[in-house]
Image 1: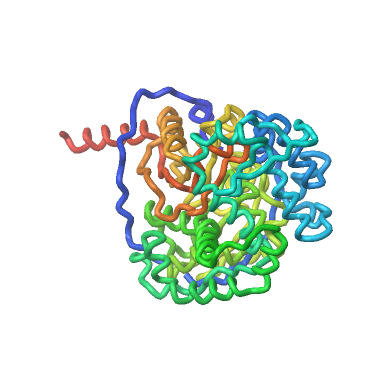
Image 2: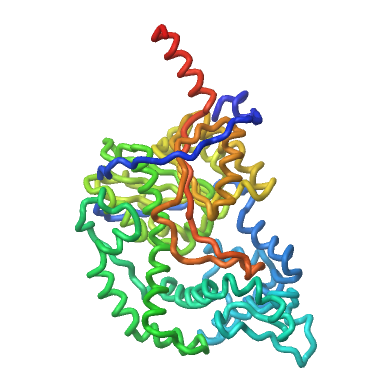
Length: 466
């Protein structure tokens, strides 16, 4: 547990953070046989998933109930059981894939301009989608004409969102298997998606060709009830989905590189992913993190522990508790708040002290409830001087998050665009014409307190006699 006086302190600071460029050291260290270990449970806390679900009604009153109705759910609690993995997806009760895809698409049916839901329209009125993007809906030509100045700015991107929304099913069913195997290039050469795709292109081309010609692809589009796009459109979607899956492990690698973590430490290195939710855990398979191991050939073991109140129950299937072995990546989960996990697991010696902490899209800038839940963790990370990387969706979120961290006297090391951001555009569900965002688009790295740094600099100056 962090020192009490510092953990309770929330001092406002007038300092600002100048843009900083990071010079990433060469990667030091993969191959990986991944050994998942069991999920452990702790006390629940504020849920970003629940807050996000109920906030849908702020923009579109009644949208949350429409979603539950179309997915054959009686309550959010029932919906959450499926999201958390406590109830199988089959619990939705759809009779066939076509019905499932239709009902899921129905959850997007509300007028993008006046926000009218189907049950608020007359029997003769039908919500029709934009013919260009097939993504947003309108209750009539007047609303569509009025909305066009806003919609035209995002129409092309939303067309990609509509395709990706269906193609993602191939990841759920396992019909799209990502490329794997040791990197044929030196790790330090791979600095972003351009070089990653160049390195993997032969293997990836064969995989994409097989998926495009598969029975699963044919079944998907027959069930979707809409025309199948051209092969180049489908191939582009598969590549975007690939980056969405691999963005998280490669962003972890970015943090290990940028913060100079020694992955050849005897006993292995430990990364805690804090604030983890169903997005990081529900459909995550052990092999999804193989790429992190390939990024660091020769590493002596990597433990990845997902900690958050929304960690999926079914995240870890194996009951193995063996120590991490050299060259392997071990995944596990813990449901609870990180500062509680620290006191119960880390301070007691039951869990390894982290070499790096990573937070994907913490969102504390947008919600007082989330900020209250995150504050003890942020102060803990600061006071124990734990190397930390966090990601955000947008430049606006980056600026807001930086200000909060500066106000907490946290020492910012660097921030900027993430070379391994997801390339899959994400639509704001209840505000469809808002500019789509991209997962982990920006990163921030920090370590310790800016006040502690200033004190050290002063002491060094005194000791040096300057």
